[in-house]
Length: 85
Image (cartoon, rainbow, N blue to C red; front, side, top):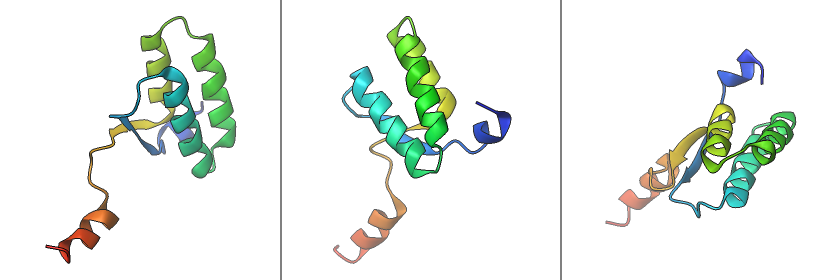
């Protein structure tokens, strides 16, 4: 991955998801594709499946996306909830 793309890693809510590596790489891949990074999604997936351990695979995913929590509030949701209370 080149330096330009490393600076623009998209946020990807993986913390709190099913920790199966196939699930996590799928979520990360979809996130990259939605952000116009299809080549990086393919590159990341290939590297993950060639990795030697779960920890190494997670490290590779983290090179391509900013791993965030599924519990972090989304601004759009947060704003919409204010009128309900």
